[in-house]
Length: 67
Image 1 (tube, helix red, strand yellow):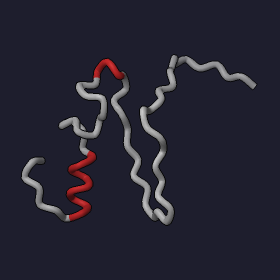
Image 2 (cartoon, one colour; image 1 turned 120 degrees about the vertical axis):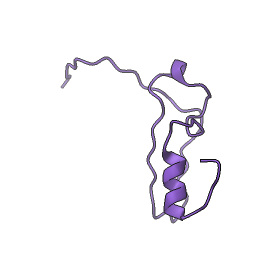
Image 3 (cartoon, helix red, strand yellow; image 1 turned 135 degrees about the vertical axis):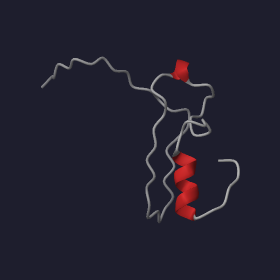
């Protein structure tokens, strides 16, 4: 059955393969910026607007001066 949506979308492929280590017990989900043209660099995580690393630093209880 086909569904009609009001929103146009595109599927974006990533430049690397999936990585799920054997014996993994945790899953970290992230997101990329919505449009490739808006990215300043190819990989989104280093972007200062991304809170990912601040969350990881807080979870680890680490002291990092860069962030």
